[in-house]
Length: 346
Ligand SMILES: NC(=O)c1ccc[n+]([C@@H]2O[C@H](COP(=O)([O-])OP(=O)(O)OC[C@H]3O[C@@H](n4cnc5c(N)ncnc54)[C@H](O)[C@@H]3O)[C@@H](O)[C@H]2O)c1
Image (tube, rainbow, N blue to C red; front, side):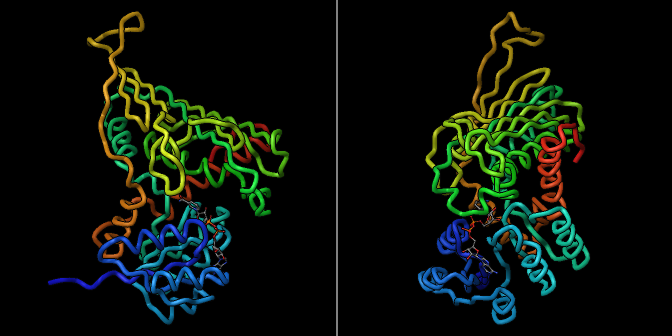
């Protein structure tokens, strides 16, 4: 028996919303049935996809009763939008960060768990096989005991990116927009973060928000980590361009995450595995590099396939609202640590 296509509605037809719309349009067994966005430009996006247009997302939910909803709204609207879906029993995929504040994130978690309606959060990198493989290797001890982690997200955003005032103000900076993906990956791969110590700087751009940060991390496992972040430095060391998974960046193969254990070292996304030739080898003996070959290019496609499984009740969200709330808590701890110049536990 052929099942009818999943009827998906989209809230927000901005930068990432339009990417979701295109992805839905080229995915078999899904239909983009409606778009809600008060912006004039959203009408033509809806028209181009043969979807109904609404200015208001509550009206869209009531009129269309979709099977699932993708929420690509400004962060401050995530909680109201996700809860509107949950209250109607409709599973949603809400873009990251799960919400703009921890309090708002808790509202989503409580609603989703009380009503038993799934909320998947758009930390798409977790759906990439390289991140999944790294988690498997580290949790099964392929590197021995994990000792240290070094990760970088550094890139040079153009000046026009900051034309939107919110990107220059508190909450619109690269900690919450970009580094949150790396923090989410590190939590997924290495386990919970117990404590952070951070410095931030706005010395180059001079905006209210940070443009650069250096962060020390202690994981619950005892492993230590360092992170470097900047959105004003020319650099190939960021997951978005290094992994070739991003929707609107060039692919420049490089490594951005480095994991070191007592038996081996692993660098991602190139999946370089460094080990001694012989058991019991040490620093005066050569290391051999192997590649673990994977197709890591389909994070967004895999995320959508997973969301369709969540809608069908075949699986639970890989990134639940509660899980993403912990990632947000770690980012808030980093910001607080920099502000108060002291170690902070998320
Ligand atoms: N996972 C990723 O790779 C990724 C990438 C970019 C953005 N994001 C996230 O996606 C979200 C949206 O980011 P963006 O860059 O697309 O922002 P954007 O500003 O480009 O788009 C937001 C859209 O929401 C619309 N909107 C505002 N109020 C609305 C309302 N009440 N009802 C319906 N629509 C409304 C706006 O008109 C706009 O079109 C953010 O949470 C962001 O963090 C995720």
